[in-house]
Length: 108
View 1: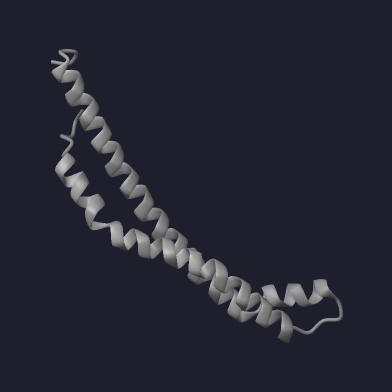
View 2: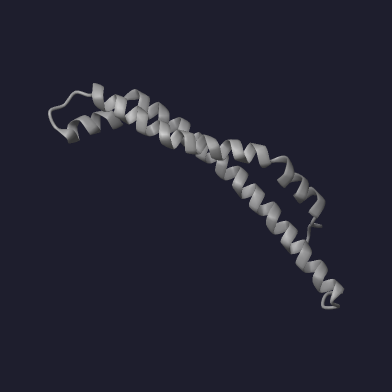
């Protein structure tokens, strides 16, 4: 490997991002429920003679478009944290495996 794996840094990163990851995950879940409220309120205000017309108008209203941007950003933040945390977990696993092999005499 070109880079030395630091399990201490990886563990520190995981520990230091617990709260940020939880907040990001909670925001995504919150927004999933908020979407239903925005749609329902927009549906009630939407013009149209049929259910499909009103639903289409509700989904294309300004509030829904603004919400979709907010939701996209929240999912992005959550996924970045999740990916970085997974990379840290994998780094620890690689370090553990490498050291286990060294102790077993398989790697010099």
